[in-house]
View 1 (tube, rainbow, N blue to C red):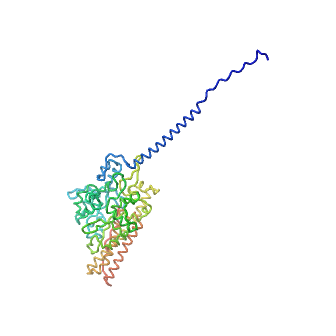
View 2: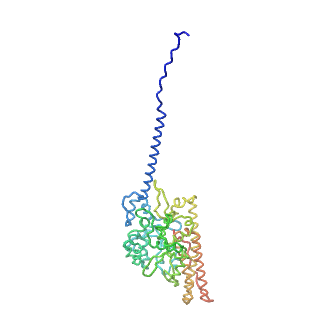
View 3: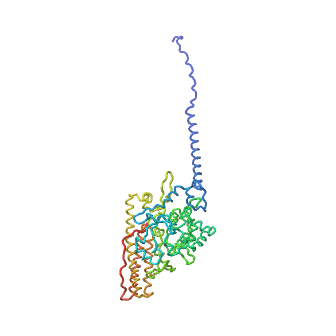
Length: 493
């Protein structure tokens, strides 16, 4: 090769600068990931801390509430959604078998109400015979919402037939602070002092119907029992079941409390002692109607003497808690509030609906959360149960009036007290068992089979009474005219 053509040596390659991109990205991503994890953990801890603080202070406080704040309007400043719903208990809407439209009423000095509910004894005159000689035969009206519970008790005509004691305020008014004041901080002692007072004297100290403070702790909003009658009654019942010293405020579950707060007042009761007038829930032998009747027989209690027959009679009072406890919903763990105060969504909040009312007026929230069938079908099911209960109730009512007619005829024929005694006791028992279902406000729905059983027992006591009367009066017997009957009526809600 020609030396002049010898290839020049290749120039040295230029040194490549180090590649920073991949390593830098890795370091950057690592740093970012670490920061994200740190931020996430921090956020989680802050969230947990926040929830703990919310548990201690679960609401935004506009006003400070104390255990002396009994005006629900003040509570409503902190809980406007619940308070607005509470105010709706003035609404009057009927179901097929209950409720009240709120009939117009001309205010007077004696009775300043602008509306009243319609008269049940005018609707079914048989009730007057059933309660002859008792105040309920004078005035018994369809129940209205919680907003009216204090007003309607104050102005009922029953107040003028038989003077009522302060005991009645236990359930018709917000008495928690009244009891505390009278008992110097002890609600049981205050309860004992208020019970024997004349109703209108005690009434001056009570301003509100059932209010927030009657069911909720003012600081934590936890449900609580404030009514001495229930505290003593449930303790007695639990003791009969082998559970001594039961205190629902420390021993009940939250779901149990969602029924217990209603059971403070929606119960059967009597006034124990002529002087003390101590409100007593007769659960010493159990919660069933016949167990309560057995207790009344044992302690020889009577509400009044029947005007037409002389029977030592009993009056049942709205035993919703007792009948519910025997039903399928109670067995399934369904509480009163689940159906009568179901949860609802308001924006992002889930609250309990404080517009307490019949589930049949709120089927979507009250029923369809569990029963995934059309609304009309659920309504039809409930009304069928209630219609069957009404049929049994009317049969038992007609039978009771026939026994009363037989007793009246026997008295007119000169029957002695000894000859009448067994039939009178049968009237007492038949009347109470019938009234237990009549006074209970679900028209049998809370426990249909139990309601049917109780009405069947009522019918059986009528039969036994008529047989006893025939035996006592000898071969000639007693000639009577069957009592007049009335058609099916609405009862309860």
